[in-house]
Image (cartoon, rainbow, N blue to C red; front, side, top):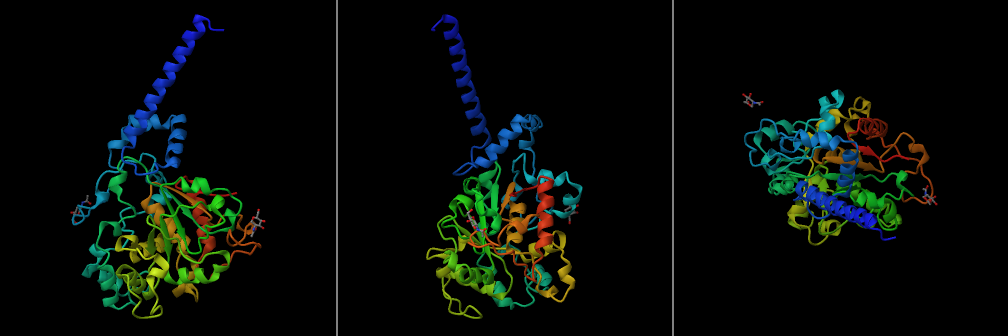
Length: 396
Ligand SMILES: *[C@@H]1O[C@H](CO)[C@@H](O)[C@H](O)[C@H]1NC(C)=O
Ligand SMILES: *[C@@H]1O[C@H](CO)[C@@H](O)[C@H](O)[C@H]1NC(C)=O
């Protein structure tokens, strides 16, 4: 039993174990000292995969970590923008894009994603005033735009997350659509393991935690889709949109209602005019919603997404003036332009006919195709992005 040889072996084994623990500990702390809160387990998982494949070694040898992976191009007035600083996620989707000739031409990582006060210049007004909503401001009076956008004056309004906190690690995001594919999927833990979770419209959570998780970092909507969801999915328990200290709201400016509601939400006062007149924003966003909880998608970003990624034939039909990418598509493409790694759950797949419209329906309902969206074109896009490894699309 306790022969000296065996004891020695045992000792070596223990020393080896201790060394590997020390090495790994050093490795993780050295590489991700400023990853906030729950360090993304998905990222670590990825790291293991890469390490096993020997890729990580290559990356480390080439010292990519000290290279500027995200360059902000030629903006002189924006020198204080945190994006200016080198971020170092060696396996960012940006490097995948760079090596794909098709997507390399489509993606522009320098385009501003969110509209904020510093973008509200006479030049911007000049460009947007003749373009109709949601891609411009033709249908919205100047005072409404000005009084809303001027409230978006903090850096939190200009970027998804404080990138300075992520200088040495990857920003991993999950975007959760509401597709029936998630019914019985048991993806909840995986979804919650991402640094940030996007949800949208009728995002029913209660009763579906195992399938869709519980974490919400960003909730995206137009006032129209949000209010419709509250009516249409109340029977499934969707009686309020996600609320909480760590949740931020992404307004999609589909028409004047969104600007007016956003302004009222920041000011914490009832909606003074228009379609939603008298509405209390607290009803939707909670009583402690301060300016820092709200972001506004940039109309030019939406225009760019439509032109480069989702240029549907609908645009030339009788519904052309109504066409816009779906809320889910806008959120997923937002994540693809702001996160390092993106997983899409509950989005349309090739075999969508096998699943219900939403994961919370008790009886299977076919997916509804609205005249103002092009879901099949979106399905093609998700499939291609997944195929080339720019994002992960949950499929089954
Ligand atoms: C930056 O902009 C200036 C003036 O518009 C131009 O002359 C210069 O070539 C640009 N530099 C780069 C790196 O694009
Ligand atoms: C969702 O899954 C449950 C359990 O597997 C099943 O009973 C139900 O019919 C499914 N709902 C739809 C709409 O397919």
